[in-house]
Each structure stands twice: as C-alpha cells, then as structure tokens.
Amino acid sequence: MSRSSFKSPVIEPKTQWLEVILLWVAGISAAMQFAKFSVSFDDLLVHYQAGATSTGAALSAVGLVGLVFGVSAGMIASRVGYLKVLVGALLLGGVLSFIQSTLPSFQLLFVTRMLEGFSQLGVVVAAPTLIAKLSAPQHKSLTMGIWGTFFGIAFAVCGWAGKSILDQYGLQALFLNHGVFITTIGVVLFFILRKNPVLDLVPVTEMQGGFFAQMMKIYRNPRALLPSCVFVFYTCTLVSVLTYVPGLIDDAALQKWMLILLPLVTTCGTFLAGAIAQYLMRPQRVALMAYLGVAVSALVLSFVGDSAVVFCFVVGVLVLFLGMVPGSALAMIPTLARNPSEQAQGYGLLAQFGNLGATVGPPTFATAIAVYGLSGLVVLVLCVCAFGVLFSLLAGRIKAVV
Image (cartoon, rainbow, N blue to C red; front, top):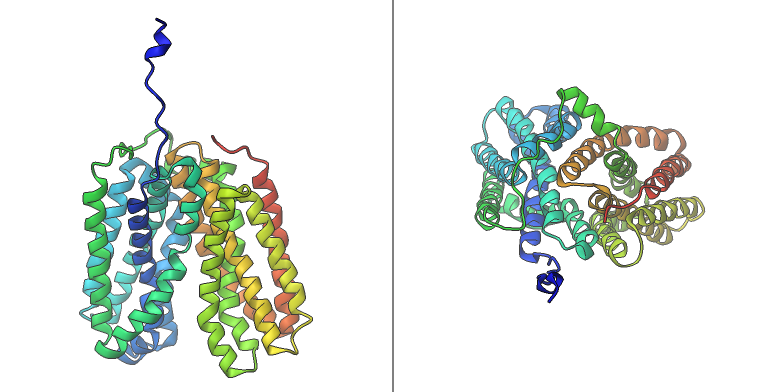
C-alpha cells in the first residue's frame, strides 16, 4: 500500500462566528469612546463651562492619537501579540471611563481622552486582525464587512440607549455604563480567546531594523498602503456629507430625518460591500463601483436641488455608495496581506489615514460649500472620487494572496 493512502483528510477551516461577533462588539465599545462624547456634547458644555472649542478638542483628541500613532500601533501589535493588545486596550478604556464617571477637572478629563485614543487604536488594529484569523477564506470579506459597521452601530446605539441614560441619569451614569460595557467585553474575550487553537498568539518579530526604517517599509508596501489610500477619501467625504448636507435642505422635518437615517444608510452600505466582495467580485472592484456610484450621485444632485424629497433620496443613494468604500477597503487588507503582521500594519495605516481624512475633510468641504454652495460640494466630491477610482484601480493590479 502506498504511503499516500495514509494521509489524513484536509480539514476545511471554519469561521468561528461567536468569536467574530464578540470582536465586533469590542469594536462597537471602542467606537463609543467617540460616540459618548458626541451625544453628551451639550451636557459637557454646561457642566465644564470650558467653551465649545476646548470641549470640541476633547471630543477629537481620541482621533488625534490614531493620526499620529496609527502605523506604529500595527508594528507594536505584531510584536507584542494581538490578543494582549486587544484586551489591554479594552481594559484601559474601561478604567478611563470609570475615571470620567467621577466628572474630574477638565484638564484630567482631557488627559483621559488622549489616553482613550490609545485604547481605541489598539482595538481597531488588533480586533480585525483576529477576525481575519478566525474567519474561513470564503468568509473573510463578509466578516470584514460586518466589522466595518462597528462605528455607525456605536453612534446609533449611543444615540438611542446612551441618550436615554443621559437624559434620565446624567453624565456620570453614561460614562459608568460605558466603562462596565467595555471592561466586560475585554474580560469575556480574554477567557474565550486565550486558549483558542486557531490563533497564533506568538509575537511576530520578522521585521528587523530601526523603528523609522520599519515605518518607511510599511509606507512603501502597496499591500498595506493602497487599501488606506482608498479609505482616506471616504473618511474626508462622509464626515463632511453627514455634517453639512442636511443643512442644505430647507424642510426642517426632512432635515431631522436625514440626521437619523444617513448614518444607518452608510452602515448598510458597508455591510453590503462586504457581502458583494465575498460572493460576487474582488474588494477592489467593489471600491471602484462604489466611487463611480458616488460620482454619478453627486452629478445628479446638482440637477435636483429644487425638490427637497428627490434631493434627500439622491443624497441617500450617494451615502449608500459611500458606505460601501470602508467595507471594500477593510476586505482588501486580508485579501492582499501575506501574513498577520502585514494585516495589522494595514489596519494601523487604515486608522491613521482615516483620522487624516476626518481631520482634513470637514474644513475643506465647509469652505467649498460656504463659497460655492451645492456646486462646491459636487465638484469637491467629484475630485475625491477621481482619486478614489485611481487608487482602486491600482489596488486591483495587485495579486491577492491565496
């Protein structure tokens, strides 16, 4: 009998859906670090009397950390271990929320917001890397689409449950509840994942050389860089559209509904992109289709400004296509990355570029709309789409890792 007859059958890897969903919940808990300050902004203004500028800086301080340390976070996670970074980041977030629940001085509050930036960054780098590891190849784009919805879901939950807690029990209860939530998910994930045989938790030390040399190597790696280049034009556009477009609608009732519905529409687009990338086409093609859809919708907007209802519908279509961009960009990373270390670097770069877009986009769009109105918005969106299409095409030229 030949030796080959004794070979054991190949076992197809299976997606561990419970673990994937829990990691998604961890992402939601981290995104609530933005959402809890957004929903309580007016209450913070009243309590601290620090002025809108200072309070706004406290709100954005979490994102500034990602802007500065995004790439280095991916490098650190690949060396220390993804589960350690994830659990440590979640527990740090819990401790900081507990401190905030005491309503400390504004200076201490600002420090906790800066530290929350490290907590949030650790989660958005480590969690998707672990999700990709726990997903079967045939489900990776789908699970990345699910992961990509965490930010919109966090804002929706905070706008619903968080606002209710805030109105009934005040700021302290809001921050305390978030602390309990983020700490609990951190503890649960530690006990569920620490002995998971699928996860290779040995730190990766393959990258040699100095810190800055490693960073430049990441920036020169198209497998990590191009998904982030696709993503950055989404963040600079979406934040601006959600902020400024409702103000272009004259009908107050429609304006109120748009503020509620647009974040949900973009979340649907993100999940839809993950499903399409999983079953119909490569993520790069999905990103290309999404940016073309945004461009066409923007062109149509310039002709329907007289009808508020039609204008709102076209904006909804635009935001749906725009929401497909992060789903496709997130799906690109495990598709193109050659190992978990490269994946973590890709997610770190994505976080950095995402914060760059969210920082640069709003003032740019605000200026264009203030000077040129709807025409300024349309032209700027078309310029953004041109770059998005370019980088989607470049990403499409890279061969996927099987």
